[in-house]
Length: 229
Image (cartoon, one colour):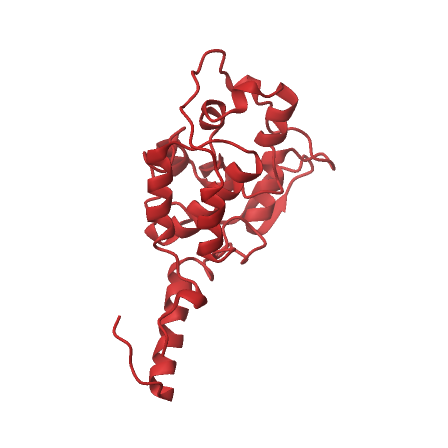
């Protein structure tokens, strides 16, 4: 974008453009609270995510020998009669009501991957941002089952997200070089969260995976990267 003279009118246009970008990125999307849930707005400066990406080791995918989802015990009990899946459904939804067994009976959920809103919890899957099979290929094959369970039930990092079952199953165990959310407005956040999970758990990335993540981070909107006026 060409630089323009610093007039109040131009500054207003820049502010409006930034607001529009944040809306497109899902900041005010239904069922989302910025920073409080994995479906919120960009959580860090994209340059920080890029720096974090550069710390990840480039590696060759490990063989799938011995892999099974059972090697990642998931949906464990999290207290108060709730398992991990139920906790995520309550966290990521709005106006969620649950039965005595903690399973959500009603509510509203916004699927960031495809930009669709749901009121039936059975239409949702809980996605592992970094799929279990990808984690296995990236280093989790050397972990204990206990550590793999911690990874599969990680409620602290942006590893778990309630999304439409359709989009989750289309993603499967693919990395960003193979699959990206149909909702392009979520690409920035998706890439940031993928990097955050792999960095914390010290998982490797492939070269083509890294290139795809860099491209996705290029869609980020952040105040510090806005054109100077």
